[in-house]
Image 1 (cartoon, rainbow, N blue to C red):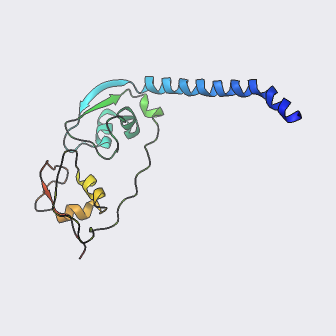
Image 2: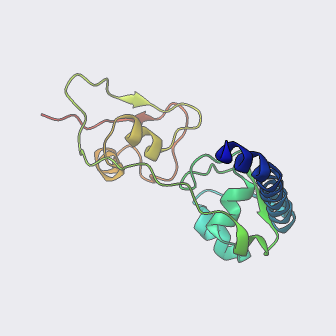
Image 3: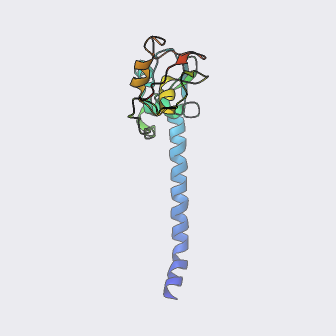
Length: 166
């Protein structure tokens, strides 16, 4: 019975701690949202990266990714023509860390029997295509030097050769 009495006696303390932790979490969220409020919009240009845009506006990649997390799922992939929110500079100091990177492929070719060529669809990038076929980006670029002169620019319907293992 001693332990039951102790547990009952501690309930108000535990409840108070839980409420304080919850309120502290809400306060941090409000502070984060205030510091990371929108300062301006930016239209993404061909060749832009979050790093380049961050340098241009003196913002961290973490800050840019955090405020655009609803529209950007991978900080390494942004789409020219889309709008990007530029947060207040204060966001640089408190934006959460980037999500961990996915493991990268090490294969330079896809298994025999893989459908090739591949035709670009909306939202594709060479990075996404390489990930889809579990091959390195560089091997995909190398296999397409003739038909894709600029690997940063592909259009819907473009033919992409997938390197196949012999």
